[in-house]
Length: 158
Image 1 (tube, one colour):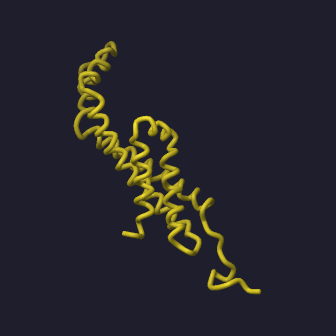
Image 2: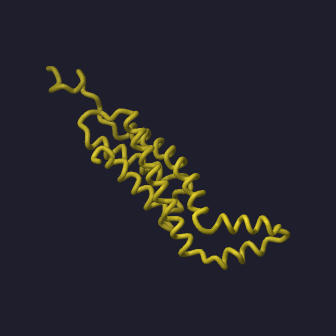
Image 3: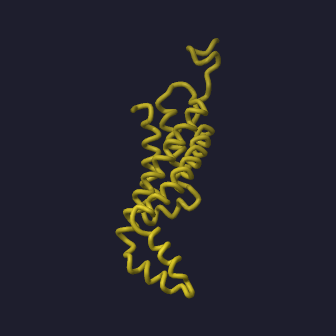
């Protein structure tokens, strides 16, 4: 479990900040996802005395992004159901002129129940995973420790 702790914390960072109403707007260009991937790399580098491998950072960012995507999708579904009353959705849809009844029924079925959560998971988890990985790779540029000459096996030669 300790091996995945930086990725879990990065994913928690991504998910919580993405789901908050006003703060989540900054995630329009995946800001929180990239920063969460960088956080996972930073925490992983702090746990190891040697420079972090790029592949290890990429996997950590991928996991952090996926966890953040799941948290954000679940949180958004809860917030949507709590804050957007169904009758308000129907009023908005009724203002669209010449909408076929079949289309209206399809939109209403998508926006209710587990369908919205499923669509959100399918879209956000892969997207967040990729951007979390990119953030982690960016984090290796900023946070990777410098390699010691000779593989870091002791003090520097005089």
